[in-house]
Length: 449
Image (cartoon, rainbow, N blue to C red; front, side, top):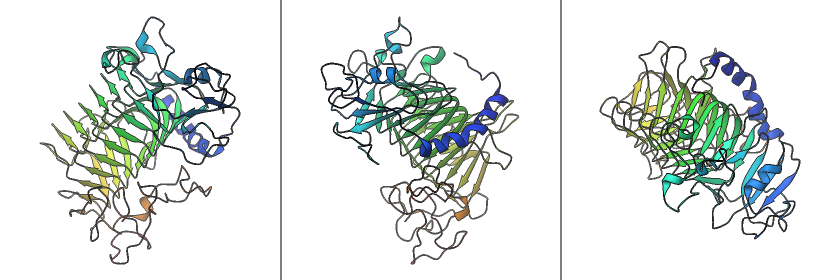
């Protein structure tokens, strides 16, 4: 395992140059061949139709080329990897996603065209490859992203029960997905009950470009850092995702370091319309921990995110940004709600924070910030009369890089909130506009009232 990127400067420059290409691939993907997988079939077919489908995903991955699509039928039983990365180690089995290949689940097994939406989470990729229910012989990584110049794409799956419990090398990173020097787009996926003995229970990304849309991270755990995601030298866009009940020593849900920050001050890791709920750290950063170091700093930008019910046994119940190193870490919060988190030191925010147009329990210095009960519903949306309605900054909203409304406009502000249904900019006529911008003024938090 290479623990360091040989040249952080070189890796960061590569990320900056290619980030736009990765994001644009969602729109410019050109389909070549379509391969079919139906795990209920007794024998392996050539894969060209549903009637003659492969009966396992590994066979389809082995024949696929860049721009190919692999359609996977949803079953009541999970799909498990069978091909070993190390012939001598049965736990090294993993689905290897080739560059440029689109692996899609949630099919009924009768489709002749790709539907615009499918059954999310229905096709299951499972790391429980040994004795059922015993985690000690589970696959180290359910999915491995192969390195290459094109982005692989994974969508409409549940990824579960990976267990990177090795003691060295890659075997203790990334129980759900291992992504090193590679590129991937992850859409409409659920990561549940994955583990790593060291870093990134659900996803470990190093020197990588990663886009994540409409995903759920639930009950993932890391023995070290990043219960759901560990990112180092990455460019990452995370939109409309939920992080619930993830655990680690530092960064219960996410831990970041060596993140490039542009000349305009914008980090290469950006989150929008995300909910962090009941994540825990035994040290710092119940939801997010950002680490600085002698040569690089951790950083992220969160826009219209909600942090609630997270906790840390040390500092930063919601977010902790390390400040004692030569290059201090920093979190930039815009249009966010940080409320009801817990820690002995700094229950909400710890370390270096840049906060504006956000509602922070206990208050925080910065333009447009509030210290007022957001009046959450049980689903952590806003109740009528919430001070967070029409109180944020329109200009802070990020671009619609995933084209959520399918109007071929990737430069407009994001059109939806976390629900994916409610319009992101909606004027509540019963609430005076106290935010920044012309009506309709955006709300604070992951949900629009």
